[in-house]
Amino acid sequence: MFYDWFMTGTRPGSPKARTLGAELRKARESTGTGVRELARRLNIGHAWITRTETGVRTATPEDVAGITVALGLSAAERDRLTELARESDGPDWLRAGIPGVHQELVTLIEYERTASAIIEVAPLLVPGLLQTADYARTVMATSHGPEQETRIAMRASRRDILTSRQAPTFEAIIMERALTERIASPEVMADQLRHLEKLAELTNVTLRIIPANPGAWTSAHSGQFMLIEFPRAAPIVHLEHLGSAAFLTAPHAVDIYKDAVGNLRDAAKAPEQAAEFIAARADEFEESIP
Image (cartoon, rainbow, N blue to C red; front, side):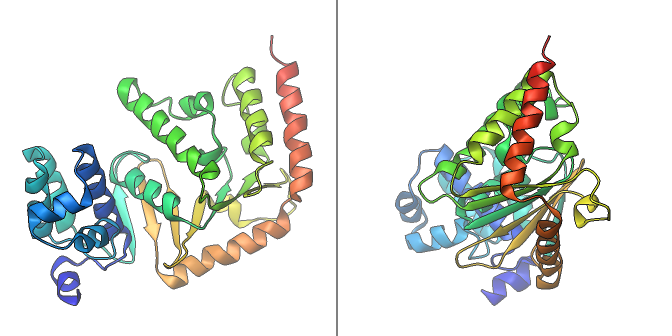
């Protein structure tokens, strides 16, 4: 395992290793091939496949080439995945591109699916896991056609984790302006807020709101972030910007965001007050519908 890390520059369990593993799992499932069948084709143990797909084991470019050939993937897809395996990464891996598309989204979905707890700080928008389809469509207005609908459908599938059998706890710390600033029609805004009311009733979901005028700077003013914790792995932080997404795993970096969450809880309204605020704002939007 150390040899794989030295040769590829990718640490086992790193964001890039998990991204590549998730991509390989997605590719295998798209062909309808089971783990044991792929292991048979490669003449290896099925545990090797599982460890590779979860990022526990680092996949080398040679590994990826063998897997993609065994799955019968197109030359373009083989080249894309092999090139991803060749990329080096550090503890905090940054991928440029369109946020929410390609490797970044595949990795984020995998993290959310296996998480035990997710905390999202949202200064400007309703968190993605809590968005309705119409609200998400407004947020993704710069995307068009099939790309937009694909992103909306994937976001909808992400929401399902909150009601799944092994759902993680989810805590959203939202600034008031994300709920009062009208970025969509009154109907869409009202529907989104009513949706938040329903989600807040789930035992694993907690909503907190930071007042519009907190009287002091808070770390939420620095931007959106997600802190994701796992049952048997170190936590990670996900950051998303206009043209890139980043995953942080370095302990000192993650600790900064952990401390920020504690401070933001102190600055936020209690969940009961948050529920009242959301209901009141939903009433206002409904009253403004022509």
